Image 1: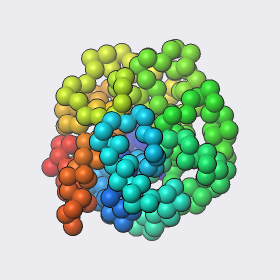
Image 2: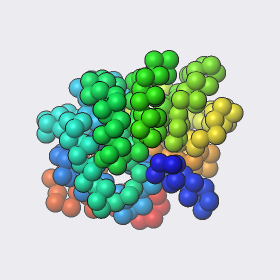
Image 3: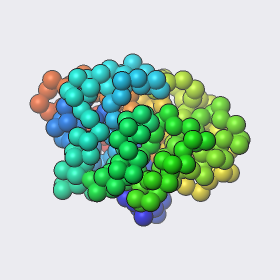
Length: 263
């Protein structure tokens, strides 16, 4: 089993739900990213999504778009991120998921990526804009290397697409809480509960909900229905606001503890 699968098993046995923060690797630089990942681990993050910067982040809102621009300005590459992962593994066993658009992954080479990501200690890969209908080579390469493949499923997905996405997802299924791009919002969709119940009919893997989760009450609401909650823009905004401070990693960790209701 991957660390992601083991973590969800541990959480289920303890009757707990997963807290999954997202950060963009290289924002503002890779050393700071590594510090933040280790701080998030100490602060109780269960799984960490490590974003690969891409020049055309069409699924992301302005906060994560700006983080991608900063990461690209710091010349962060996928190869650099894999090397960083190997360094983190010397200090932490927190489950890590590479979160990327498909272009950088395909350009790197799927088999090469799978081998090197596994060797570096990553546990899975999510290609946000890869359609499930075209995902067979990606899924095959990652599965051979023992990596989880996580796919997004939206409220607008047809029953047939939901079934296909659920079958291709291992580790967990990433349920988008609403239509549109990533970003913080004040209220979660009232239709989320029905959407998650529909997903449960198609998969036995854990379901995590993301997009728009930015406050403690959001996490609590999601945890009532899902196995995990993903927080992206709200965490990335903290990095943006405190990047100039030497203790940025501690500040981000303190924010996540507040989100979890532990700070």
